[in-house]
Image (tube, rainbow, N blue to C red; front, side, top):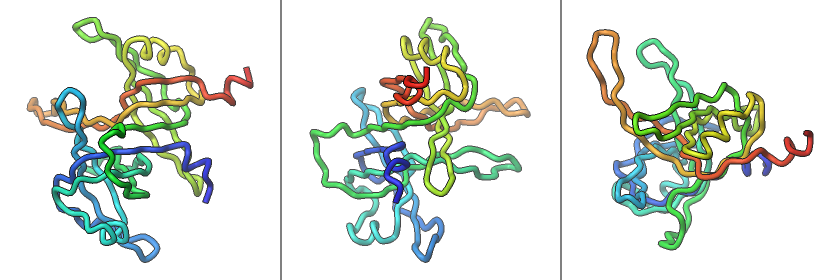
Length: 211
């Protein structure tokens, strides 16, 4: 096991399973299931985060709908064809089920990745600064996860100046966001986006040493 790749992408989420886990796929003879975790925010709202868990972990703990759980793992991306187009989906891949601890931050992610697209900086109608960035996070077996991130205020100003290819460290939380998508026929459709909301970002140490 390459622990460097594991440490590139560390997520901890605590919340309630909102629907009975359903069978997804099998890999190396082991079944995997999918569901959604409702994770509370300080504001009183909840983030609804998809997760994938092995049959072994699911059965060992006896998890089901309405179970209160704490998961550690990784935030992963995959492409799926929907309506003839390839779309990026995110899910938390559960590696471990932990004891519930009310003193823990219920939503935390630490990732080390590379800026793989030009950051998009913009201003809201209320003059709030936002910057969207896509990070490529290396995984074992020559794979990468592509994780959309969003920065605000001072972090947004910092992010807009970072060149493509720069290695960065990000701490934040996994959030879900409902938005209205305008369709070609003039109608709108409600959709949910998943992204990393950045609390802290800095250039990774090995990049700094090369300067």
